[in-house]
Length: 390
Image (cartoon, rainbow, N blue to C red; front, side, top):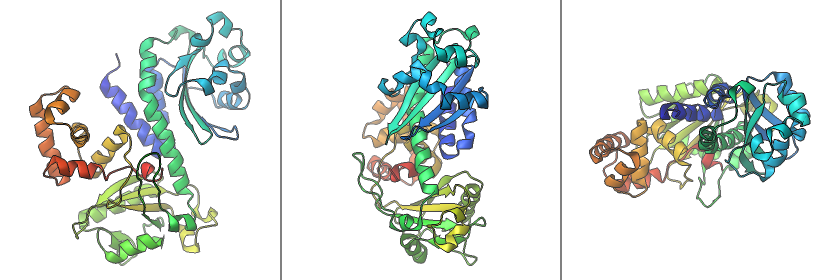
């Protein structure tokens, strides 16, 4: 069996890649190794039929020929629109080995790419977009086993979430000034999302070059965030300011992130989300002239707003990043926030109640809480940026 640590590490890498697409190689290599793959790919087909594919252990010309010609001749791809989301299938699920080896796809592409048997899984269908995940195996590796199918199915929701986050961050990277100015989020998908988002454009030195009306109001109030003399951003303390400036510098290199900003007024914290601009900002002709110098968009989410809750993995990572919780503390926090008692939490995590009590005491200290009711309220206010823009 594959260790839980290995799988958890893969999931963390998947979410890293959702923010920075250049990081997809690591999780795809890890998944390929666990599934015994000779090649592994993750792709999206847009409504116009254009494909965006990230592949490892597969020659670029093979990826190109697959996208432009052989995908349409692959019996598995033809079956993809009717397959269940998150449920993997193989060529052996559709036909015999002999039938598979008589197809044009296998003879002209699969054999050359050392893909003698394939696993394919739909992971996303949204707005006319279809996301898929595929692994090919060589003849030496043999057929996929049930454990491989189970592992692929386990990773499916995380791959789906990563593709959704990536799409939303792509949208954020190309925001126009009118959209930044009017950015509000209405109820969607059965949840209440953020209704007001402050947005600032920052240059490569972290200086504010443009801000929408909501952001200007927050900066003027100087409660949690403010303008420094050099037009950079400051938080309530030197340590918090240094962390905020580090977040902005990190975004300037192409890697986004988030940070909690405490407020002297005692109001709920702000959440700062830094999103790198994709390509030169000057190319976005709808931005105001000052913002064309920006490399980063910083969103400030007011924790007074109701917001949608992400899936458990995303909420867990948000708690860890915003409050410095350990993995187990975050798991305990989410279960307690569901309204269950310590014995139930202990059973669900297969640990002793005393262990849960220890983690609970620690997470309460880190989050500044005193009761389970406060925890339930706070977790109900926390989300990742991807859900705020859903």
